[in-house]
Image (cartoon, rainbow, N blue to C red; front, side, top):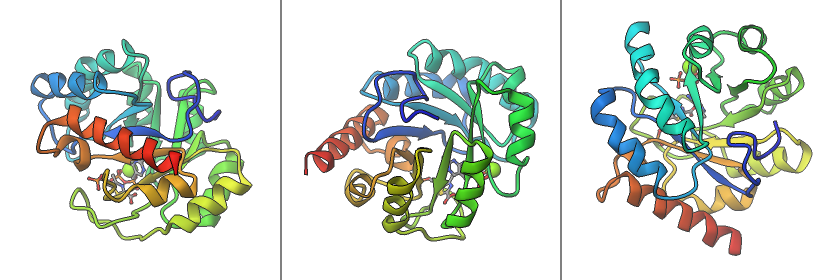
Length: 221
Ligand SMILES: Cc1ncc(COP(=O)(O)OP(=O)(O)O)c(N)n1
Ligand SMILES: Cc1nc(C(=O)O)sc1CCOP(=O)(O)O
Ligand SMILES: [Mg+2]
């Protein structure tokens, strides 16, 4: 994947990748998503609903996907490649216990974005990259309350990867405006966040602005 592929926009050095809260009511969440996406640069949105029926996920896609795509922000579905294709998503994110990358690619085709969780593993990332993943995701970089994270990644993994590989890397796990600088300077192409945006005390727009300001400050040195 070219480093700017999530929106086809001019590639930037490090961009935001929003992941939704694990449970949401689509009509109530829609204005929050609009607020986040209208607050500044966002490369993509991942719909990550856990413990939901496929019908619920489909309904959430129908409401939320146009909000992202109308703004030229890629809309990626977590875990469900077939549903992603049927619901008109731009791609899918798969983990090591989900549909294997090759099957996800077959289902979605070559034009879709397929990203792969690689935890803290160089080996998993090299396999995913060689197989054709559009990005590899490393984490968790910091403690997170959003899910039980079994792996701990270090910024050095991002610098190793970005110096050697063209495939973009996503950093995830407990990332905030306050702690993201080492990940940006280490070479993360995307910062994936849940709580720093949806749990921001001043709302998701303020969360996006704070993260983009922190990215810009880190890149300026
Ligand atoms: C960008 C990004 N990175 C990692 C994950 C985690 O995927 P996975 O390990 O499959 O765990 P679940 O998210 O499915 O609980 C992700 N979703 N997105
Ligand atoms: C979905 C997910 N995957 C992770 C991994 O390490 O693979 S950490 C994580 C949760 C990220 O949420 P927050 O930004 O609130 O910490
Ligand atoms: Mg998964």
